[in-house]
Length: 293
Length: 326
Image (tube, rainbow over all chains, first blue to last red; front, side, top):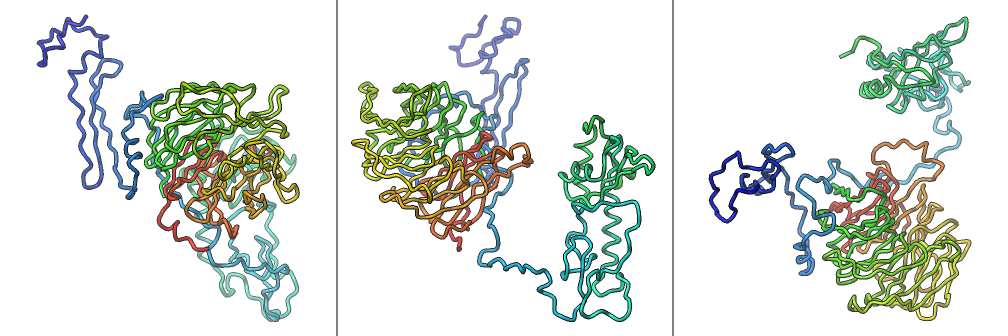
């Protein structure tokens, strides 16, 4: 029942016993008016409204918006009039809280396909075209490219190769010159002492890599390295995959390790795949060492 | 640039159209409710309620008072832009696909889909100055083209109607007699369904986008092929910049690849090409799904794209865009 006389401007002495609890609409005068603090020097505008929520509690809603001047626009008179049109249709029920129109948080650029002005270099069909006669023929074991770089200098050294996986026997330590070269060096120089060999770099990167190691348990018995690689590569570049295999039966012993290049990728993989159903078993994915920090 | 994201539609976008002054943006989607937004900051002004099916296309009159929309519920409705009231509804036997006001807004060309034995048609209706005088009579009806006509627009001076559709042939019709004047060449033309058509600001040339992964630029009077722009995906939408020599085309995805694509955020892009040199200028990423609609603001300083994800993205160009050198 509305005991409140709306004609009297000053608030009548309310007897709370007479107030109808469901009558939320009539009590709007109890709320302080909406305050708009205009854009300050940073363009921040605060709008403070009060309303009653579903339980009848008085709620203060503060909306902070940043007003940014996009630029001068020359609008015609008609366009300016249209700016003041009343909203209609579904827009009538809009309140400040609706997030229909939002400025993107990311900066989006018009990405050029390549540096403008440069032409793509014509690729030489014979990969050895760039090598001068008489030089040592460099063969990279990682990407298989000849004449470009050594294995230690391979730009793809941290990434898992599509076909190659970590095998449980030591890789044959053969010299990098698999192909005959015109001018061979007379004495043997170990790879670590050759010109341009990166020593501390590889050790560090390998150690960093082992901290990004993820242990995967409860694998099904016919899971192999390529399967794990396929599953984990969506989170980022993988440098190494290993699945423990019982030599006698040839089946997986149920666990394996995946080394990511980036720690964040490993973290995401753990969050996403732990508990993931893979080939009728639920995977357990965790850090290999007790939470490297 | 920081695009403004407008999520007013629950279903995929189908069409976007700016009014002549460039301060209002009309969006159509499969969710039955065309919406109008302010084109500078993306605030929603209102929605037009009344359709019962996906809205495929819309057009706005020159004075921004009348909006016409074509929908899959077999009607084309005429609305008052300011209040959202429906002024008139044209009924058809099949879904209406494309609508376009003539110059002067006295006539409108409407295409309907082939449906239940009825062939696809192109119809021209008269728009009465006062909504109470409005009748449903067709001034002209053209039947016959095979397959769905995806878009039909008026040619220069309202003398011709240009239509393009599923049979990948562009046809030019006389707007008074309905006679077929020209057809595009089969070898040099598109090889698959034409999904979109955009006229230049002066109607001297137009751009068509097709599922054959290319967009082609044609001369309106002679229907000669001027340029071809190649994409790596089927083209769903295209637009010509009214200010610079740029075209933008947006695409989708081959049906085969849908299950194999990783839906990594924002990978679908609208590609900009130089209109004359045909080289790719760049791409603007951000959509979570194939781009179905593109439109340039008539002042050429901003453009908007609508996607399968239901978002409209409004981009105001950075100053660097206007000084791009090829």
